[in-house]
Length: 446
Image 1: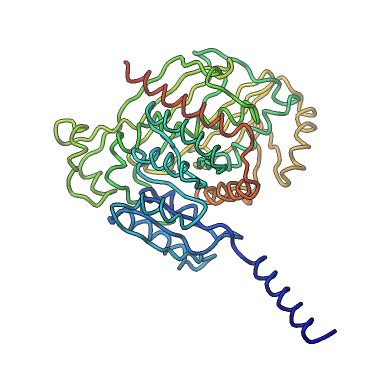
Image 2: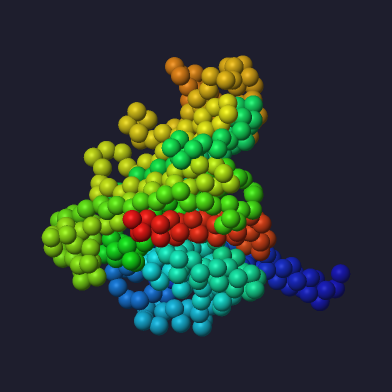
């Protein structure tokens, strides 16, 4: 072998090695007003550049975001290695669209502006991972339709952050509902006795990443954050579709609204100051003040509807804080043979637990049918209680809400590598936001 050939071969191998080590994904963060923008960077990812280009107006929202990223970089256990390259200016959106320094855009912030961000970014040919909700009213829903059309035209992905699909109890509830030997078939129920009920309780004052969460002042303005009926209920409506009709392409014709209602959570100036560090209500909140002292926030909502004939109720509640526990989730799916229920109350020590309630399936048949699920999820088991079975779930499956953001990002990066979402995702996202925005219209008529 000649020296020339040897050095030429070495050069080729070195070049190929460099290509294989390149990280093709680079994040862009746009106007990160919500802490969810930071949570997707709570871990490192393979094949993702450490440099993240951030575009935002100058202000406290941006500073709080950068502090959260820095806390991940400097923590003792599993530190991240993000380098935030920040552009501050009132033309942040135009600057981001012009420069396009990255190929995965993360949007989590003020929901009044979010749908416009999504639409313009999709038109610019950028892949988008957006926090929920992607729209908060019917006008925004029409923009969202345009955004999905633009994403399809430009061959990019548009996806929302549905963390609750990563919660192990909801995963197993869905799995068990697909085992006819245990669950039977999903019942249609009635408006008075729905077959699916999902309720989520949240708190304005809580801890995130080990510290008290500081809320931006606009978070309490439903014209910017969105009412509860179009915000957190997005998760609940998504779970109904995902669990009851897995991998099925739905349409708006499958949705029949029965009723909807909304009501406020009250907040004093002192409470407002604790979570925002501001000693007065800003002018944009004065429209929501009662007696000039108490803030009325329409954060609570309930939607009763039929999805392909299945009567469903979703309900979201917001309290200021809780003396014990934290945010909680309740869910029940009613089958012809069994009910599958998630409870997260004081009896469960505020840890979500999954139960199977049946008197139509023998113990032997139940255990036999459950065996296949145990093989898929090693370590889970059934414990017989007085009137139900507890699904015992090992701690290794309980990754926690904050970790779920990383799990959603992993799924999105996998879709990005394939440059394709599952066929049902886009139509079902549109059905989801149709349901929430139409429910808001209905609730406001009362």
